[in-house]
Image (cartoon, rainbow, N blue to C red; front, side):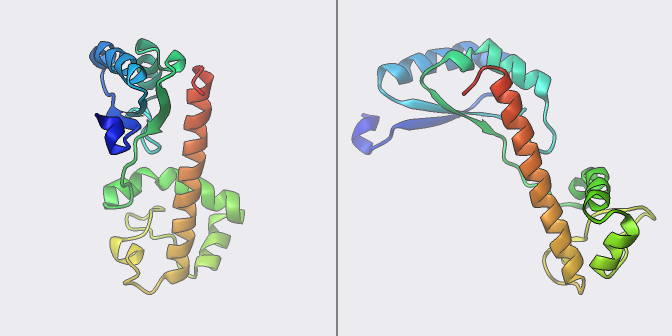
Length: 168
C-alpha cells in the first residue's frame, strides 16, 4: 500500500475536460485511501495563462468542492531559455522599467547600457548576458529582478483567480 511507503499525496496533471470523470474517480479513491491530490493545470501558466480553460477544467471536475484535493498547482515552465521566450516578455519589461525608474532613459542610466535593442526596440538580454558571460552585469541583475517580480505578480494573479472560483 502507498501508506506503507509514507506516500500521502499524488500529483496529477489535468489538461483536458474529457479527463474530468477520471479525475473525479481518482479523487474519490484517494479520499477512500486517505490520500491527497495535487492537481497541476497547465492552463494556469504564469507566462501564458488560459484563464477561461482553467476555470472550465476546475468547474468540470468540481475541484473547489473536492476535499481530497490539497493543491492546485500552477504550471512551472522555463521562460528565459530562448530569445523568442524572452521577447514575449518585452512589453512587460518595458512597462516594468518605466514603473521602476520613471523612464527608459533613467533605466538605461542605471543599467549602464541601452536596453538590449536587438531589433531597434527594447528587448531582453542575450543568453550570454543571462549566463554571466557578457560585461553587462548590472543590466542582467536588473533583468533578473524584473523576471522575479513578473513571476511573483503572475503567481499572485493566478492565486486570486483560482480563489475566485471557490478553491481554497
